[in-house]
Each structure stands twice: as structure tokens, then as C-alpha cells.
Image (cartoon, rainbow, N blue to C red; front, side):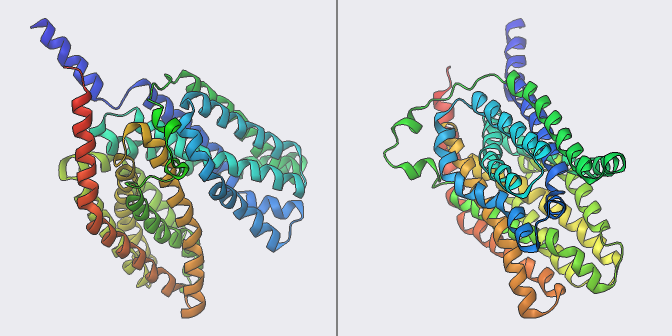
Amino acid sequence: MGTGGADMSADARQNSIWNRNFICILAANCLLQMSNSATNTQVSTYATFLGAGPKLMGLITGLFYMVSLAVRPVAGPVQTRANHKRLLTVIFALAVVVNTGYALFHSVPMFVLFRVLHGVQYAFIGSLLMTITTDSLPPEKIAAGVGIFGVSSSVAQAVAPRVGIFLRAWGTQRGGEDLGYTAIFVFAVVVLLLAQIPCRLLISDQRPRTVGRTADKWYRQIISGPAIWPSVIVLLLLVSYSTYTGFMVPFGEELGLKDVGVFFSVLAVGMLAIRVCSGWLSEKLGLQNVLAAGTVLFLVSFLIVGNARSLTGIVAGAAVAAVGFGNASPLSQALTMQTEAKERRPVASNTLYLGMDVGFFLGPMIAGFVRDYAGSFRSVILAGSASCALALLVLLLTWPGSRRRMESLRGQGEAEKPE
């Protein structure tokens, strides 16, 4: 009887998401997002302060993502071969160097140099964090864990921009704009140094490395075949999401609404709440069902907001978008990671973040074309529903293959368990 109770307790611990590595990676991710959200929201104004013109300012702002996209073909193979704990520690140290450079050297050439280094760091960090997260979770709890991982980002992203604004105002008041921006970057350095603590507390991964070292085709270490279609779903959802982030403010001005910022407040709070539940819902109702329903709700939100004539309609659309995207985003990411074997999750994660980079790049560009062609921001918002429809179509067409893949991997995992 006592032995049976001990076995049940051990099983419960093995099936819980709240293990040492998961808790450490949540803390590291939250601190990273605090740093990024405090500084990235100030990049365009900082570039202007340094003397960059509008074109150069746009280039500097986008350089972060362009460099990241270019480096990802290298990041995938490196993550497949490297010890994740050591690599994470190095990448966080690089982030400290970057923000120290921002704080010390206030000139356009040096800012461009450190922005390039920041893009290199970004190419590694997101997919590496996602890989360690999913490696630390029981297979059946990946969707729930990825949802909570997203919550750690959302909390930081809700708080940090205000911290950045406060520090800039505080520094400017005491020593001019130069000190104001320095204060932001010093804050980022301190936060990233704190992040080294959970990074060093991680238990080193014991993954098999034969796949990374013996693969005969280099591109198999960059893009995962089974993860491509789930990553396309993520890409399409982010094309739509970037429509909101990039064009809601001018749409509100087009309507003559002064308080359109409330849209983002409702969206952020709603997504924070729903992401906690998304994994649980997928366990109870099935990942495909919740992901499909979330995508449909996200699509409907564009129709509600695009046809709104008042702030009430905008807020209603934001609430629907929060429920839709708050479910669809973490579950599509979880689906991507679940289609690969554990030893190839770094490749799946790299594929996922390639899709995210492309989605964030294409979204504003497509929306700009729609604005030029249709002549109104209302058309841009309504057009955001098209990408959601494509995401739903891709999910429905590719789900049978993804389901068979996940069932096969689960079967292999059961076969490898000791009796």
C-alpha cells in the first residue's frame, strides 16, 4: 500500500508541469521580456534623438528582425548540437553586452552595430527558450505549458513599456535626454544580469545528440518538415495580428476616436486571462477543436472591429480577439513543437520562429498595400480576416497528418519508457 502511494506520488510529479526547469525558464523569459519591452518601444525615438532621419530610423527599427531572419539558418544547427544550459547563459550574456553598448555609446554607427548584435541574440533566444520549455514538460502537458510560458511574456510586456517611459522621463528631468535613455538601458542590463540566476539553476539537458551530429543534409537542422505546416498557421495568424498592432491607431483616428488605446488594454488583459486556460481547454476539448474555434473567433473580431462606428464596437472586437488569439497563438505554437521528436525540437523551434519572423515582416507590408489600394484603414482591418481564414483552411487540411505524427511520437515515447 505504501509503495503504491509512493508510485502515485512519483507519477504525479512526473506529470506536473511545475518542475525546476520549467519554473526557471519562466523566470528567465519574464526577465528577458522586461528588458526587451522596456527598450524596443523606445528604439525609434532613440534613433531620432541620435540624429537619424526618417529613412534611417525605419532601417534601424527593422534591422533587429532582418538580422534575426538572416541568422536563423545558423541558429538551428547550433541549437541542435549545443548544450542548452550553456548556450542560454551565453546568449543572455550577449544581451547584457548589447544593452551595455546602448548605454555607453550614444552615436548612430555604434547603435547600428549593437542593433546587429541584438538581432543575432534574438535569432537564438526565442527558439532556445521554447525548446527548453517543451523539453521540460510531459508530452501531454505541452499545450498547457506553452500557454503559461506565453503568460510570463504577457505580464512583462504589460509592465515594462511603462517602466521604460518612467525611466526616460526620470533621467531626462535630472540630466537631459541622454541620461533618460541611458537609464532605460541600465535597467535592461540589471534585469538581464538577474536572468542569469535562473539560467544557471537549470538542470543540464541530457538529450541524444546523434541527430544533430550525423544528419547528412544540413538543411534538416534548419527546418523541420513535420513542423512546417503548423508554423505556416502561426505565420498567418501573426500576419493578421500585426494588422491590429500596426494599424489600429490610425484606424481610430480615421473614425475620430481619441481613446482607441483602450483596444490594446482590453486585448492585453483578455489574452493574459485566456492563455492560462488555453492548455486546459485543449486537454478537455482537443487541441484541434480549441485551435480551430480560436482562429474563427479571431477572424470574427476583424469583422466586428472593421464594421465598428464607435468605441463600444472597438472594445467588443478587442474582447473577441483576446479570446480568439489568446487560444490560437499558444496552441498553434504547441502544435508545431509536438510534431517533432524531443531530440529535434530545437529544429522545430527554429522553424516556428522563422514563421513568426516572416509573419511579422509580411503583415505590415501587406496591410500597407491594402491601404494604398483601398484608400482606408477600415479596409486594412477587414482584410486582416483573410489571413485568419487561410490559417483555418491550412489547419483543417493538414490536421490529419499532424495528428498521425503526434500519435506516432507518443507511441515511440511509450515504447521507450522502462517498465
